[in-house]
Length: 196
Image (cartoon, rainbow, N blue to C red):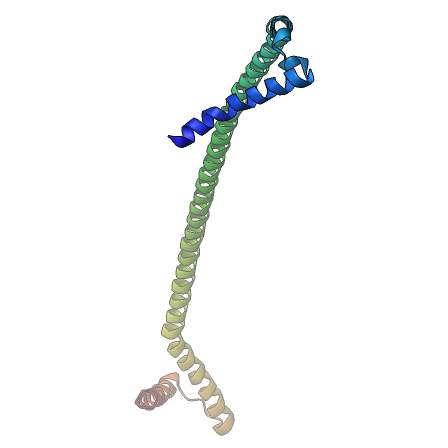
């Protein structure tokens, strides 16, 4: 309570002191009540003029500038948002193109790989078939040689033996005797060969 009373008394005592000082010294005319009406008039006139100038000339320009800047900012924001959406769409299209290209490349790779594998398998089958035919042919030829070789060997042995005996002894021996001896010896050699 005491603080509130002292707080209100300070401005009043200040005004009282100023008025006393102005009256005593004839000091500042602003503080002399005699000039207050003219001061209020000029203050009203000056601030009225400032208010009219500000409200009719300056503030409308400022507000129009602010509005134009606001509209420009809104247009820029809309344009930026539109460009952002367009760039997002472009990025999506780009990613889709990349994904499609990867899928196509993978499909091309798989198709080429399958084609190459088919060609390799086909060539391998043909090669296996040719090799089997060659092996079978060689086996047949070997078998034919095996089958025919004892007869040829026997025939050669008979003729050679006959010629040797003729040259050694001077007697010509008949083929049946020599063939019996050659066959006997070949059987004996065969038994020894298979026994070993």
